[in-house]
Length: 146
Image (cartoon, rainbow, N blue to C red; front, side, top):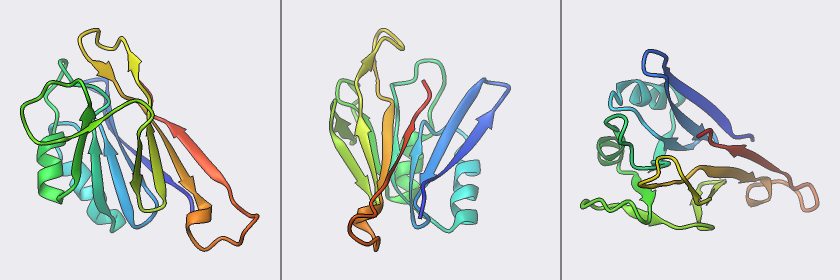
């Protein structure tokens, strides 16, 4: 089993959202306000969203993250210093977030924008957590573009 990464792009805004899945569970990164395309993709792939992540608090567009998390029952993950007033999971540098066989590592990368902390995630899938025989373990990595 491998990690499948799907890109939901809005060229007119120069914007991208990402859905990563192990085939059963999914994590959505930086969902756009129009979450219908993400929900359609979730239905098409037959997966369940466990986490919705924002790489940073977006001052340049309105996010669909909170609504997507509420509609799917997923955890809404934001950088620890985001300063928002609604329920969310605060993620700190080095923290691991697990979704099925996928693991995401939070990496603090300040500077985009300067008033918040960007949180690109390194996504790995540990094939040893599934049914792979001992000694045949491998990890695939994906770094979210900033």
